[in-house]
Each structure stands twice: as C-alpha cells, then as structure tokens.
Length: 205
Image (cartoon, rainbow, N blue to C red; front, side, top):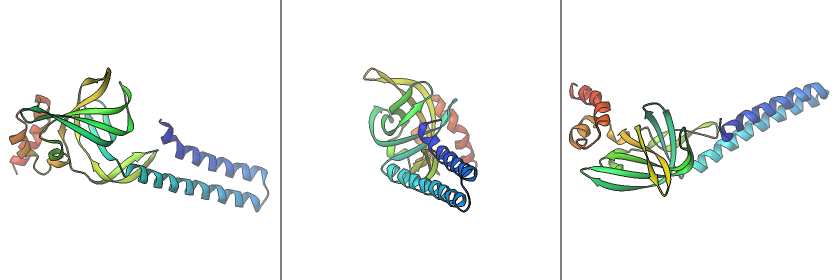
C-alpha cells in the first residue's frame, strides 16, 4: 500500500480511537462532544483531501490502462509527450509523467514509452472519467482507457523504462474495424491478433 492510500485509513482509525478514548476517560456530555468533533474532523479531512486531489490532477491527463499480458490495470498521470515517427505509419511516444508510476519490475519511474500505429492524437480521446489518487476515487475530466501490451523496456540515458504497444485507445471507437483495416498493416502481430475479434464483429453487423 502506498503512503497516500493509507491516509484515509489513518484518519478514520484516528477518529475511531478518539471516540473510544473519550468514552473511556471522559464523562458525559464531554465524551459525546469529543466523539462528534472526531467524526467532523474525519469528514472535513476527507473533503479537503478530495479537493486537493481534484486540483492537483486537473493539470494532468489520466491514462487508466489495461495492460497485457500480466499486470492488469495501470494508471498513468502524464503532463506532456513527445512523438517520434518511425516510418510506415509507426510512432514511438515518450510520456512524461506528472506522478511517479510504480512498475512491478522497474520500480518508480517518471516516464514510459508507448509504440503505436497512426499519430498519437488520432488514437487517444479524453473524456470525463474516474481517477484513483491518495486512496480516493475522484472525477477526472481528461481520462482515456487504453489497452496496452508490455514489450521489452527502452533504455534512455542509462535507465530502463516501461515500454508498451498500444492496442486500442479511446479514439479508435467506434471506427476500430476501419482503423485496423487501413492503418494497422505495419503494426506488430500482437496488435493484429488482439483486434481481430473486434474487427470481425464490427464487419458482421
């Protein structure tokens, strides 16, 4: 558990401990007053933490990704990106993170690499969604839910960074079949395999 995720639990535990202590060591009506005060403090602290998360994340973009083949969900908050064309409609995009991302193998990193077909802004589409931060789930106005496939890490300035192949992203829908047919010829086989089922379903409608 990250330190930020433990903050709401600590506040709730602290409020509960104060209530129990007040019942044990104070007489009425002071025990009740202290109990009410502890609950009010907990609620106020949670509201302030939620407001802080909303303000802090407002300048960042939320990439809440499903990562194959084994990591499940990964959430990236990024502030900027740089795309490099590789030819044949292929790109490598360097994502600069506004919040450190804890990778199971590479530890905490401040950037990740994403390879993809078609330009970055043609693939992603940001809209209102949910983000997890400091143990809270908050509304975020710039969220995309891509599907990524992890590949070998990229070395940059002597350090290795998590690297992914973008399979699908928000900008692909509802035109995924057309994009697969027209734009993915140069993509790795894993992308073609993971999108083939979607392509067939759309074509059969």
